[in-house]
Image (cartoon, rainbow, N blue to C red; front, side, top):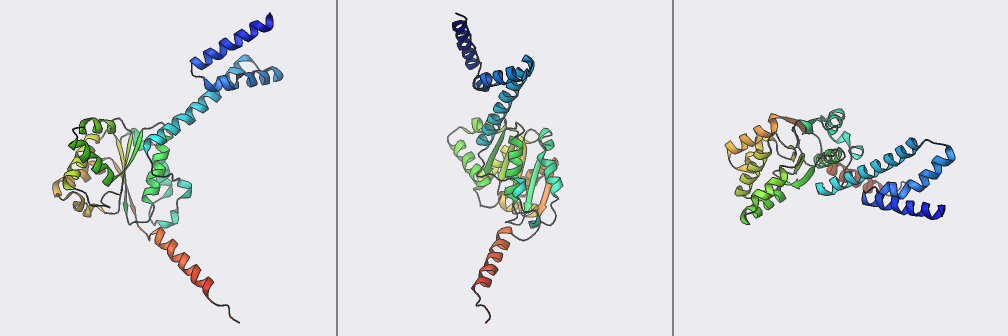
Amino acid sequence: MQSLQNQDQQVLLENYLSALGLSMFLHNYQAYAKDAARSGESPERFLLALCEDEWSHREANRVNRAITAAKLPFFKEFATYDWSAVENIPKSRVLELAQGGYLEQAENVLLLGNPGLGKTHLAIALALSACRQAKRVRFYRAAKLVDELMTMQHTLKLSSFVSRFEKLDLLVLDELGYIPVDPKGTQLLFQLCSDLYERVSMIVTSNLRFGEWNKIFGDEKMTAAFIDRLTHKGHILEFVGESYRFRHSLQQGLQSEGESKPEAG
């Protein structure tokens, strides 16, 4: 009779745990209970262990959902960045940004300079750090975002589309100016960034320096206004150096040339 009652209590407990969404409690409570009984741990320590496991599980799921929602094209971490590729980007400054203080103040990060120096790499690493801090992040190639803005305007869905960005903590705008876009599209991009000004942080990467941004917008006043909004509360990192991809290809070429030379005999 006692055994049957215990079974009923176990079924009831598991039903409650399932209904409450405490999946790690449900999965681990029996093993943790046995360990606690063997080691003489208090009920509070037993519950604490279950809570810690549940929290870690939920935190991992939350981070995974945030990373999935960010639509990153690939993953890049600070640990794999070649800091020797740039001459004037302090690693300490980038890692300080990764702590997320700029997000709390809705500040921007601008990564400008020569191609092939890892601007997108660092932008993605910063985006991953933000995801791990419970921030809502979205990554876009600039030309792709302009295309979507124009499509949404054409289908009369622009307002609802823009409202999604207003819920973000961070918008990553990659390769601004890399591909020419329709002038009407740049106006929509300017309007979007104006709407997000001082509300949502942006990370912008571009191979063009500010003096060349008029090529993107084709209008000096709009260009000046766009730069003004981005830099007002912005952290500007200018990349100077030789393309990592070029150096890598050159090294491979020299290595292959060395291997192909006949041995002296």
